[in-house]
Image 1 (cartoon, rainbow, N blue to C red):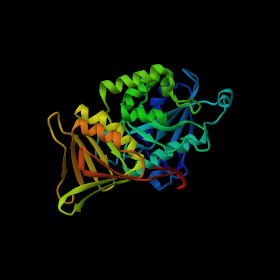
Image 2: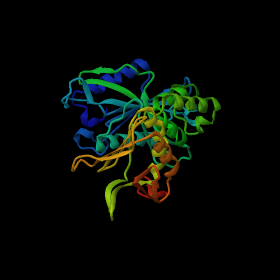
Image 3: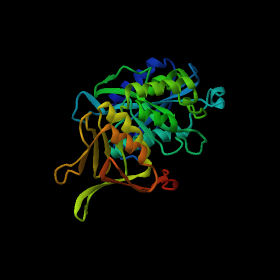
Image 4: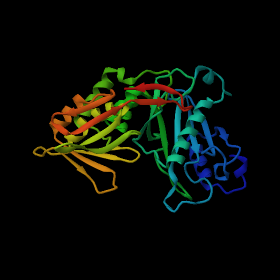
Length: 367
């Protein structure tokens, strides 16, 4: 435990440590604390991270965070939930040199990776839950050549029972490294279902930086395709940095609705629409200021565009199945203007998307 908080009662911290002691009896974990606790103004969001060595079913490090939940005094208003209600775990395959050295230290990048996830939660207020996914916009391990550029979140299979602490309940949510292709499948289908399909090929969902996409396995690819045809997509919200909506007046004609989106989101939009609306499920595109809600018009309905009340910044579009298919076939992730014959009252404007790394350097331009 960090020295700045040693004098403070730590019932939450002690409860987490006791739970892991049951899983790893007799093993002292590698622990990495902070010089100054977050509650005392320290720069790191997490007060600590512990890592246990595992040799089965594959050799790996089992990381557990301390800091998303209330480790010390109860401060939140909800007596049933401790802090954000979870701690993260992360299982990382050992390198051969780490396996052969009993005194080896876990890789530093994994600690920074978990701290960065914590900063995202603490700064944005967005929390992770079982079944969520998130892109890393590049390799999750800086300086490493790996196809693992995204992550899914799932209840840790060995810590599935929520932990009851004096400060409320805590779940252990495992971060699972995914390739870009696997992330796309998770978004199109369901993250939880995809992870279940991948589990036989990655025991305990251990992240291996050296692996390729598991969708290269014909059986895995077939299971995902069958699931999509059967279930459609569970992804009901598409978040984007670029979303603009406005009405454009035309001489002697009705005004049109102009929708501006980033090229990066176009692929996701045209992929998800046919997996949502024909199944009777809406899709919400959420930007910083505007929200575009795409709803099924129904078998006998017509296309319609509805602007919500003044200042709500919400536009609802009701689309027929035929329009959904035409939109998916017409809209492309390339800069330009697009108008569908079945939806002439809407103009789609696609802008280029610039991808930057954590240092602000441009690493890719889409569109």
